[in-house]
Image (cartoon, rainbow, N blue to C red; front, top):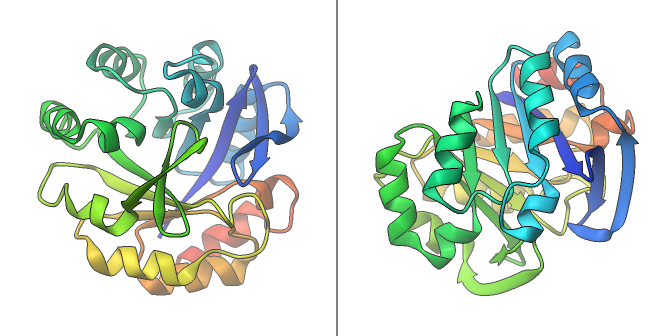
Length: 238
């Protein structure tokens, strides 16, 4: 199972939110590129970057920090937050990102997302953020009535790189993942599922790996050191 350390960007800083709440922010560093180097030095083979300002504004905002990260490390990086046009997709991929996470527009314009996934095969990731099993959009500021599993099923057979599934209730809370939701999504789709939200201990990582998900994103636990990256990588290799 792949481990994706998270680097969340807001105002050029490396931060973490609790349950996606922009008023519950902790700043963990003012140099995201240095943070990226730190995770790679500890063994990270992938990095998950989120432009929190971009998710809220509907367009990439923290591009200078993203570019600095890409210059600082030589591992595949994916970015989510504000990716809502073909022009933006092309610009970000040309900048050196391996793949891009798209959530809001996949819900609002599913035909457009299918078209983009075919235009950029293996480079786009379906991002589904759920609150009580229903999809949240616009940087988690809005919750729809669409079932997360039903949404994922709409894109069966498309050349999508993966599905990042985030349980908002557990995100940033250090309370453990929603294992049942992750297992349900894993069994419902054929595309690789990347679990996100609540990973706190190496036991959490091992239990997620046992569900068959392709990877997991870890944020606050690494920054607050309830879990070390080497321990997470070891637990993922069961």
